[in-house]
Image (cartoon, rainbow, N blue to C red):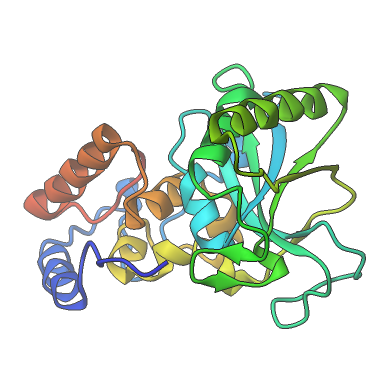
Length: 253
């Protein structure tokens, strides 16, 4: 959770000044800063395409969301709570729920198996009562399944992980998803919100649009430096190009 900021506060201010100094008043391009830029919500892009959902608990949901947002085929990510009995849990009143991330993805682009692989490679499944510096049952490792096929794939992947770890015990639970409760707005796209300059680049979207935005999901991963290296470099290049040209709207990656 604690890592070097990619763009520190001073750099953000300098870059923002550069961008604002080159503002172009062109309604056709919908360039309106610091007001929001109308973005077609991700669900409209995929409205005629059957999406699937997957839910995983792998420690702090701030990082978990960033782990998945940059994957090709992932449409949107939402952090929340699942796995417990308390109705309508909240961050300060979780009950027996775990922090988790819900991934909506296009099965024609990415399947459930790669999502499982990302799950195993991005946390320590041997830990029982937390992940790293985060201690508590809300950080436990769980694969929430939707149906028999997901349960089978999850079980196979767990057996494979156990084989790799040999003498260590994989503590990950596999259980059917009963309910997913989205977390409060301040927890959504948490890594992205730590970089105000990036929020400016996509037009200061209101919370409801930010949660639905595929672009915001990718930038959330970028901000946490969790995109694949090639994608991380591509986004870096786009941002540099925006600053160079004075083009204050990042519309796609």
